Image (cartoon, rainbow, N blue to C red; front, top):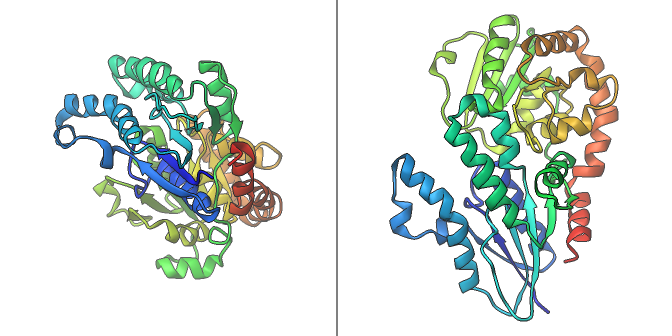
Length: 366
């Protein structure tokens, strides 16, 4: 019986992004069921001469060709023991062959077309057209062609049908609900060195415009009475380090996040485009109310009253975010109870690892 699964993805799975996290989870669940996994990515597939290219042109060329090199490397290692190939994002268009055939599975974590529309004001026209037509309508669409298609949310399934005409199964993404659980707020604040007398808000993400960081900066100015935790990946604004109501943390380890969420009265997620939204789901799993723009997880968990008050339809509507935060701070205990009593059980049912593992195998037939 074939007991090897190839996983094709753009970046090494050790990275900190959502796709990399999902790939690690796929590896874990497959290995637990006795499968061997081999991951092909830019780091082990791209030729050295291309990897050394620098500058915008070199990076663009490398980005265009990563799916080719990853697919070519996977084909070189193809054996009769391969039961399935799981490709991700726009890495999966290279035609792999073997007789007898293997099971082809493609996992969409969002679409570049959806992203391009969301961030259009922040990129050049050429960049917008490149993302929309080349990355999405050519590479992404070809990557899922004639395969079993999985997505990380109903939102993405809708995009895949609308843009590509492909049917898909929303299997969502797993969360370690044993780790991401409500912790004592006072103890969490003490561990972070925060004063207990002020309300605390948190933003986890990056300064990229797609994550809505300008909205967060606007809120910090309007709410000086709130102490803000900014847990940022990558570059961080030095100007915020000196602000007395801001604790700036950079590249926080993933297993440290439950303490941060549990210390906060609320979390803010103003992303322009969020196919799933680990931040929203993990914060809610920790019992922390989330004020969020529409994304895969926020649409699911914030659709019923009273939590629908915290779903902000327009990610640029700063005043609505401000009003929602003030609503939460008027009675933070009420919203925390609603999250723990109504939302946490839904997260367990849909995203807890054991339930996600079952759904994954049911969908893939592995």
